[in-house]
Length: 357
Ligand SMILES: *[C@@H]1O[C@H](CO)[C@@H](O)[C@H](O)[C@H]1NC(C)=O
Image 1 (cartoon, helix red, strand yellow):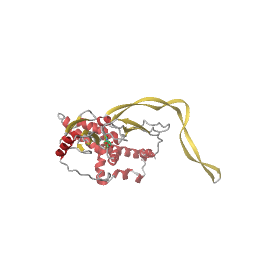
Image 2 (image 1 turned 90 degrees about the horizontal axis):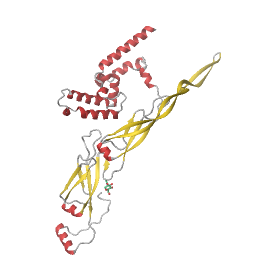
Image 3 (image 1 turned 60 degrees about the vertical axis):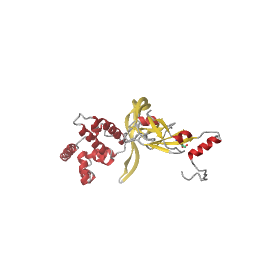
Image 4 (image 1 turned 45 degrees about the vertical axis):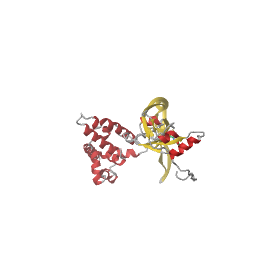
């Protein structure tokens, strides 16, 4: 019996070697993320490195172009769920082959032959997991525009060794008991192992959260395995949910910003120039020559929020004008003068306010 098993192991090892040779580039290393990194972490790593490695920034380096292309290839594969799955199993070569012949490895190694190499089966077993913790994190619109690092102190329960033993890995098993000749009884029974005892002690932990430019309301920022611990399994995740606080001047919709400006009637008629202070302190210059009516809207492209996926792209800023009318009564002479200037015939229209908006 020993010989075939040895052969099988040798075969498996050879295959692993073979896969390794085929594997090509290590995309995880290129992005500097762990193999368990989630899409968000991959995106973050990519955006950071794309800025650093951009060939325009590294013109003296002859290898800059190649490294940038490597990065692009790594991102393309790891940011795509399907491609990543194939890459994880069969490496870069697997992706090329997968394109042409489906996934040839699966049918060979998979259930068809019932080899059951162990490792694969092992993953299918359900590991108990602690609860996920979701915490709201209030951030200002300024932080979402400029980016920021926020430190959060968390008390995390950490398992420590304690005296005694405890029951663990409990499961139900069927137990067969022979009661007499040809007579059996089958009962379910709780079976447990004995594990060293542990207790949970809260420990301070400083978590650093990067508020990235363009992050959106309700977006979640995960810390893998920082959630509730599980005595027999893995801890859950801790996720911070970005909650934008209300801003005094700007309202955000997608990547666009909206603001209101009140101008005097005189300015509205004669034109004006003004600056609006943006979220990073820069001034948005506004020049208006024509007459401005109440509700008039001006669009400033590229003055909105930075796009989360690509910070070089920004939304628009929409400015809606409101007119501050003077109060009181004009003299007869002024009234005549204004009528002459405006040359508007006296006209009234009665309408249902719901229309036209
Ligand atoms: C602008 O004015 C409109 C109408 O009064 C209001 O609904 C909106 O919230 C205002 N926007 C901002 C950013 O203050």
